[in-house]
Image (cartoon, rainbow, N blue to C red; front, top):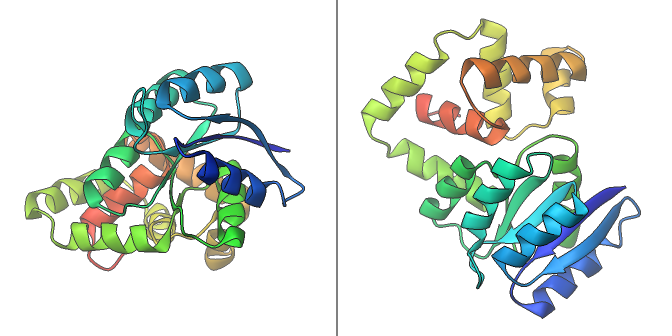
Length: 216
């Protein structure tokens, strides 16, 4: 069973998210929070698999709460839930350690699939967020691209291929099929890249890939 805490300052939004998620037999919303500080307390109390966290809330905004959860409760995966795709918010959330960026207007089935993907250890960016990131990185400072390419120099050819597919948003199973390897091998390659590139999660790996190449 995937345990989830939902944090949003609007009660109707929380109720809607709970209603969608609990249509899935393998997902359970264990608590709801109306502020960032309350979200922190509930995460410490319930130790959920996933925290769905709105960006703007009273009592400490979602981005600040995300940083605290990622630092102090690393077993809980943090996914930002918002109506915004503005790049500054996306990038700060990713750098804080969030592994997902979901939009409140996404389809119910897509929300359930995203929660399952995050629980399985994959990163998830809503398509509009991915397009926003791509636009940002295509217009990046060339020096950032040079630094990113230098960081990737120590990867093997196979690791580069896995990274390219990961940056395109493929899950481990899809990467495994594309590379004709087991999911376990994909996870091992991703784990090594996290160490080599000093990244905290898959989304940060994808960010480096976006920086390094225009065609990711």
